[in-house]
Length: 273
Image (cartoon, rainbow, N blue to C red):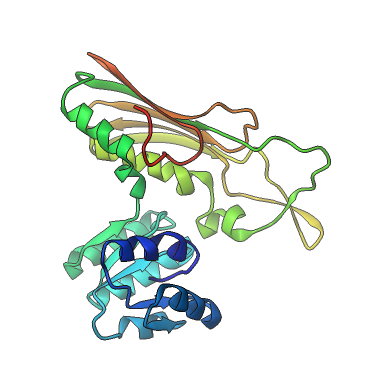
């Protein structure tokens, strides 16, 4: 497992819970790698990713680093014959994405993106109900996530953090949470034929070294996707609406409607449908 933030919170416990041996952990700082290895009883702790790939008995790599590192790490791991589970956003742009897909196909290894929300029970049940024909022919989908923290008078702007505020680093709501909605819709309705969209930042004010700067990573996105299956999906998301109602996916078909509400940004493990 590479990366001990989300890697320690999610990847390592999940893999170990399924009886998979986590042989090594890699982090930028040795003390963080050592701490994770000690906490989860992992035999090896690295800061050198390439050295970790040379470890005997290693079959697969879970990449849970910041997005800017995904492309190079995934390509190197595939070249070493390792299967890949890579966090989203798995690439920063289309060129990286196609290069990673090409490397995966040429390697013959399994390469997956960690879109775990498609396995939340409510979303799994949605797929089953759709396949049972409950809504008839699906036509229109609305996937809305309208959230935000209540305003506090006199609160100064946040300090600029590239991991959250810089689009070139893979930050932004579309990559962070919109990608999960896109994956879920592809899981239910197949491939997208065309898309239009827009991103913006409604509250870009930040400070760096005491000076005002602006974040360019989005905290609002809109997209309309037309699927080959003739479904049209509209996605709207923001975390800059302090009194927003939450999130929901609505599916309208010729014979019925499905609605899957959620309170926060992530679907609950056992949600309502």
